[in-house]
Amino acid sequence: MGKSVVLKTFGWSFVITAIGLALAVLYDGWTALGVVAILAVLEISLSFDNAVVNAGILKKMNAFWQKIFLTIGVLIAVFGMRLLFPVVIVAISAKIGPVDAVDLALNDADRYQQLVTDAHPSIAAFGGMFLLMIFLDFIFEDRDIKWLAWLERPLAKLGKIDMLSVCIALVALLIASMTVATHAHQHGGAHVDKAQTVLISGIAGLITYLVVGGLSGYFENRLEEDEEREHEQEEEARRTGSAVSAVAMAGKAAFFMFLYLEVLDASFSFDGVIGAFAISNDIVLMALGLGIGAMYVRSLTVYLVRQGTLDDYVYLEHGAHYAIGALAVILLVTIQYEINDVITGLVGVVLIAWSFFSSVRRNRRIAAAGGEDAGERAEVGSGV
Image 1 (cartoon, rainbow, N blue to C red):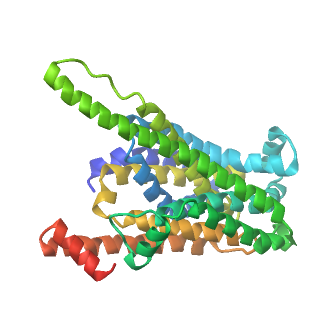
Image 2: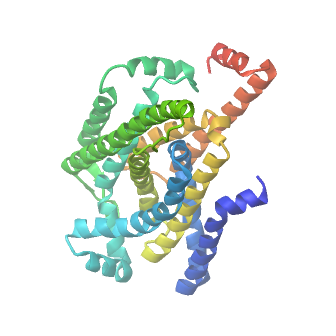
Image 3: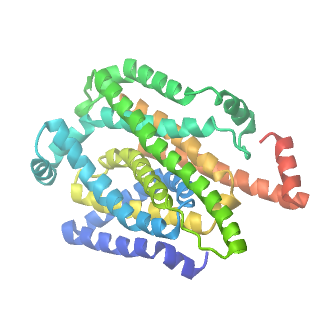
């Protein structure tokens, strides 16, 4: 990776890091700098799989919408999910106004942390169901390239059953509501029955996925159809010398894919926001640290797109989706049980690293066999 590529892709991340760390020192001295740095590393480690999945979607968008993702999208990710989201949760949980919630966050950090922690079951159910649907729709789709072929081939056959993903997700939610939700973990170690809350929040997460994912998929398909039509019109224009109109659906398709990316990022950020309280309950330091981390995740997403990394290492997307599935399960389990963020982060890192090295081995087999077709035959023969 050349210096120019690093600066072009990660330049703003470096600038935000410098500003964020400087603000931390001004806010509460050098100790605050260390806290912000740890929070940033936590966010990056927990969200690396997010970057890989985002890249798979972002590569379908043009340069304009990629820029929107890096500008407006970052503002939503940093200020929306890492700063405003916990405040909104507190306002809803405590049935107080947003201004009072901000005052609570700034002047009574312990009470603020307690309210956010007590809202964790609903947050985990919503995010867990959204991420679980992403994972299920991925593994039930029949793909040309398979990573764990022994598992993905039979699952692709099962995926031909209509609404299977939704049925499995609802069964998982029902099980969670009857098990972990009946003894949901609360602030101070207490356990309460949150079955109804988990059911409602989980269904809301499922509906959000179906609506946003369905709209983005619909407009993406319409865009592909219009692009094919435009290509035919261009061919006709070359023969007749007439003008051709641009594809009008591109804006709608890109907008809904952008919206889908933002909801996806929100679901990934749930565990990071909750986990950050293990390090600090200061809303300012949390916003600075998680915001810096979110900026690097955004830059990494763009880097993966521009370098064509997903095309070169074809199993990365598989590994990221398996990490999503693992995170979905972890979120549901954390309704009752505390799971260390190191474990959560390591699960994603291990799965993505495994898929990366599997991709490297695949590329070597293809090179050794002397071509793509021979490499694919070697891959099928290996059963990987």
